[in-house]
Image (cartoon, rainbow, N blue to C red; front, side, top):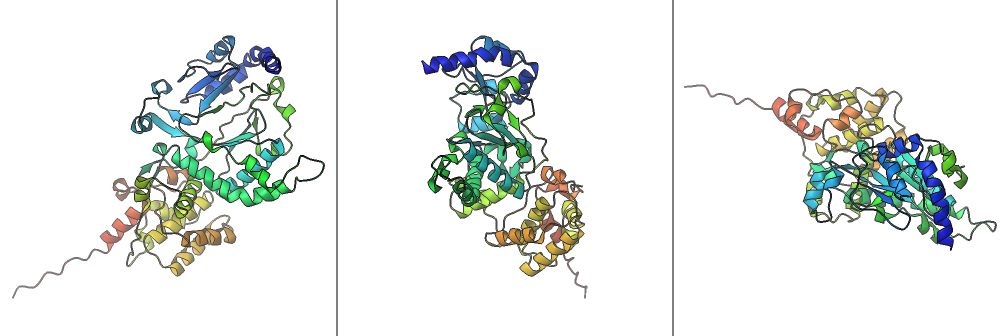
Length: 425
């Protein structure tokens, strides 16, 4: 009887709600390059499916659809997906993936705490543009768009590393926020609230199951069958005071779930997570390990003239992308065998030229983090460096993929000794 009441309630508003052109538009635009599936209260529709036109949404609703779900993965053509595809076929068809964190728990206030802690950690890693929406029940969805990630890391195509890399990043995020999460949740343990303890923090850990091939999540502004609430988009400052009534579908204010991000904005997060995974032996992919094994080279007579144009521009001091630039400098200097004393001097001298400078505490923490692990190469060329406005390629740039390769080759060219011809007797 209860299910029948819920179904009647959701069906009562679906036609009215999904008839809104602004709702149709936001759902349709978010669906591009994604596999979608309508839900008909009792279960999902056929897969794969896709919207061809905005009006398709209302047509699905007329056939009984109550909500819409979509993939994290981005595809060339969702209709070409099939369950018999092997890994190589799916990698070829996949053009990217969004990193989605699904926060869910028994209590909405637990979810709020976790959302805020995750956002704080992402901000620390220089990710300022994060999509946030209410899940429709008692949680939140956070999204970092595909554009934020480097398209290649040390010769590995990022688009091919789904679900391995998103899963590693999610584990890294969980690990880094866990202590503060427990601390904040414990503060809620008062006699006037639900019974909560430290173990309850486990109830708000993001759902790892979501980071899996072809897994679907509720689309922004889709309704939820059990609550009849809309999956509304929020600004970070709205999380604290958010209440379930704010997700009333008849009062929903439309906002874009996908934020306007900078190219490569999440590079530092991905690299740190991969390093953390390797140090903790969480990476079981042999090919990936092979690609990340890099032995630093000690270059003699290394001068600033050996560096590629992008690094020279960074060393002049920059105003935007300083944390990403710091990540580049540390990894480049270590990869070419620069002494610790000289490395730190160059980094701090560089920081004095920045407007404004990076906080010294942040530089110290990044240096400390770097020294605890083996050197790794900085990000590959083009997109990442274009994102911070320092990419001005020269002729040598055309034949290399990474600032380390450039520096080594240029060093050899400039220091190449011309053989001395012996005089004839």
